[in-house]
Image 1: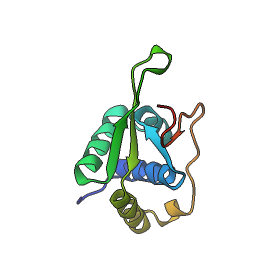
Image 2: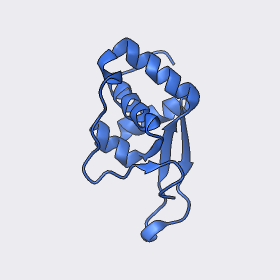
Image 3: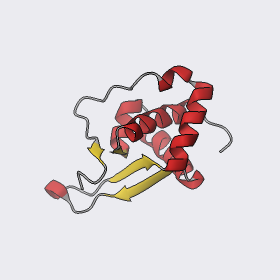
Image 4: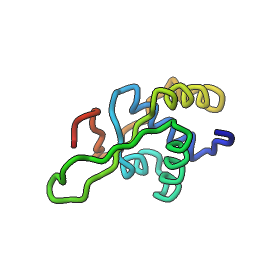
Length: 113
């Protein structure tokens, strides 16, 4: 991956924080935590997927009759790359933990499905 934008750094920071807590996030949660719009978040996630930095999986079943969600998490390579990029571009990001958005729907891997 060549150029990493500010929005992509925000998304990597949120994903790395979730990775360190062994949780996965759905797209809406990433949007709320980064305060970025859907097209920005999903374009970045697609780019990270293409680079092998992010993995995604569909929620199984339809809890409460709502549509299934797609969850995103860093791959092992992606976690290493995110740390590297953030260390270079945002050294303080590795020292702080982003706060969860109110009503957060963060699920540990394997739960919420």
